Length: 149
Image 1 (cartoon, helix red, strand yellow):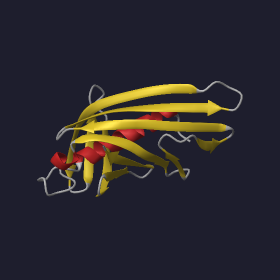
Image 2 (cartoon, helix red, strand yellow):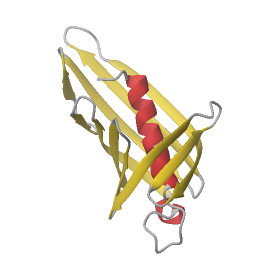
Image 3 (tube, helix red, strand yellow):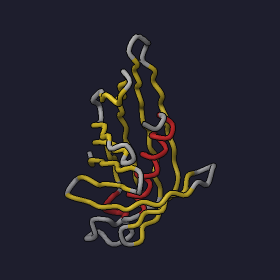
Image 4 (cartoon, helix red, strand yellow):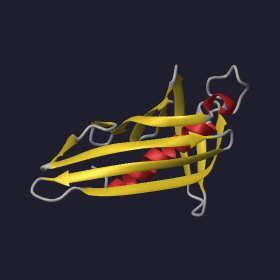
């Protein structure tokens, strides 16, 4: 499984992408005005190794290692800000906690979200879908699901 930093960046990028896909009016569920608010992480899937980590639940990722991920993203009509906490535990060793956060801007064109991180200028592109109070951000390697508070 990817390291916590990469996992965090993936989730952040996915969150950013979801926000960018919403650029229509209020009747459009993918419009930024419809996405504005706080979203909590539901799950993270690493598609390259087919492992899904439900938020807040320690998940065995192999070799005696478990990971627990929690997080949220706040979206406005043009910006995102997220924080993720990764707790990694290896048998016989103390758990390690890493908290990561990021902010930036996003835009949406159809179901494609483009996110640009403040500072680094890193650009990430995702596909966004929505079902009720849940959004999914996805690229070739990862999928994140978020639920609106």
